[in-house]
Amino acid sequence: MFGHTKSPRFRAALAGTLSAGLVFGLAACGGDDSDSGSDADASASAIDCAPYTKFGDIKGKTVTIYTGIVTPEDTPHIESYKPFETCTGATIKYEGDKSFETQVLVRARAGNPPDLAIVPQPGLVKQLVSTGKAVAAPQEVSDNVDKFWDKAWKAYTTIDGKFYGAPLGASVKSLVWYSPSEFKDKGYTVPTTLDELKALSDKIVADGGKPWCAGIASGDATGWPVTDWVEDFVLRTSSPETYDKWVNHEIPFNAPEISTAFDAVGGYLKNDAYVNGGLGDVKSIATTTFQDAGLKILEGQCSLHRQASFYAANFEKGTKVAEDGDVFAFYLPGKDASTKPVLGAGEFVVAFADRPEVKAFQTYLSSDVWANTKAKLSSGWVTANKGLDQANLTNPIDKLAGGILLDPNATFRFDGSDMMPAAVGSDAFWKQSTAWITGQDTKTTVDNIEKAWPK
Image 1 (cartoon, helix red, strand yellow):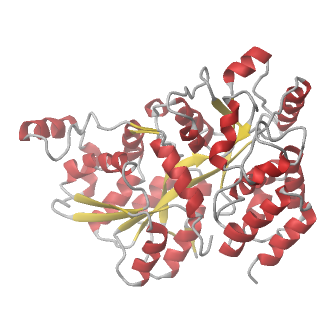
Image 2 (image 1 turned 45 degrees about the horizontal axis):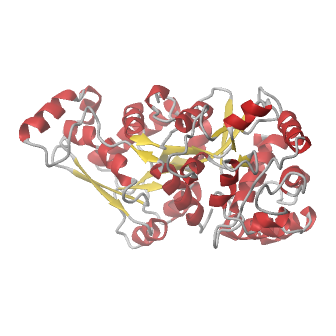
Image 3 (image 1 turned 45 degrees about the vertical axis):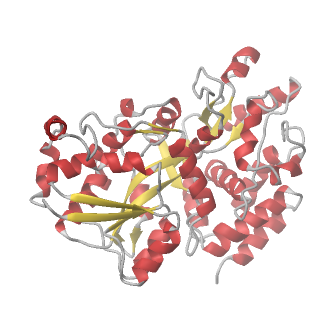
């Protein structure tokens, strides 16, 4: 997204994901700065400092990190830095700002950037690089990304042949929420192919139900949930290669493959027999908030809701989100059981300085050591770092998402509209998709979006 940060979606997703539950404290780190000397000594001795010796002598140095992750979601991040601080003697100065997406650009252009920034979209990384202030990642970080991530992740922040930002956290968008008890009571099984998903939807209709509920209202960002549906279906009805060409405008937005994906989505969202359970007709999708849409599963008014892993936070406190709970999710299947395209999003760490202590902390954040430290601290957080021990993930949705991201058969692709120019990704695509839901035909929709692509 060149010029947009999809902040309404990003903030909602991030806040939802991280506030689903936080586990504070780290056995290796002990308490906070107010601990007594003996407690601090004990916690320091409990940390294995061997992984940190390679960073050399950076004692007394300070590294600043700037992000849109704010209180209380910042706590597990700050806690995850403690082993690095304890073992190296360096200090990490954390700054969270709700206006991060705008202010990080202002600061970079003004020549006052932080040492490091946690950037939520590849498009914003490209904008930061264009300021001339971003610094290419050191070799150690590049090596970690080669070792621990699928190669697609590295490509997202490789600009003009230079690699700038290692991935950090990730989310899975290719999920369908459902009621395990309803499935058990009615004999439904989790589908493993698109044909089975369609057959399940038809079975629910035959049983007198409305299979799907959906909502795309999100203030100024209304329409974005449709873009996720379309992106998922481009990956499924065409291929990851076609998806890449589409996102990069190597094929036009109104190419036949994209119209096919819209029509496939329309088979669900514009089907009066399928939607909108407990909420109204097809047009009610446009006026139902994305936060509210899936809640009808718990009321038995619909059976299925396609939304990302962060959606777990939208259910009321006390709702058991688990395979044997009140609500859970399954992977949105591919064409067949062997193909596993995964749509998702994530964050990247970009540097604006190359001092030894900055390189050291950047390397730590790209490591398996940090990924496992962070996983132990956060409920509602996952990463695509292959060095993650999934046993460290603390809740069922994290485990589900982690299993999908780290499946060797998975083919991951980043949210497409997050990588398109602002005039498309956070404007025409959202608005035209909303018009499409309320009655506009597919050809007009894709033609209008194509016209919005900057020349």
